[in-house]
Image (cartoon, rainbow, N blue to C red; front, side):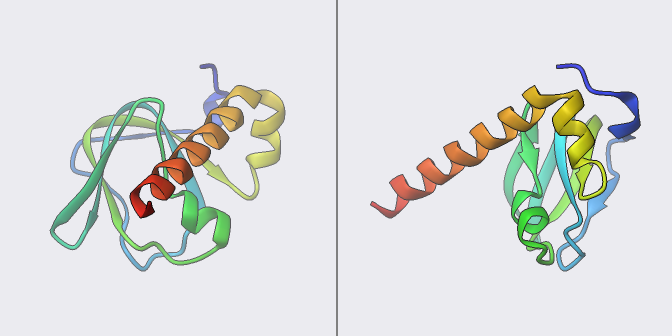
Length: 114
């Protein structure tokens, strides 16, 4: 997937991307590497290439409910309110992939409740 360089941020292993309680102004797409999502000491999930994290806080404008830290050097596409329109025009496949992942997560959540 091709994304203009101005949207990409590089992180090194051990870097903290955000902490629980922080403002949720960005949504992140992993181009390369790995990120762990934790609540306190409990690991909730690991996010890898082609996956997103930070969706709920970004879309709803609510504080982060978990922390994110880099477990493997990473390149992330950082999506915010200022650049999302440009990304939709420059890389529509990125936005479509994000929507598909949201739909998949909703389907999985519904299965768990059944």
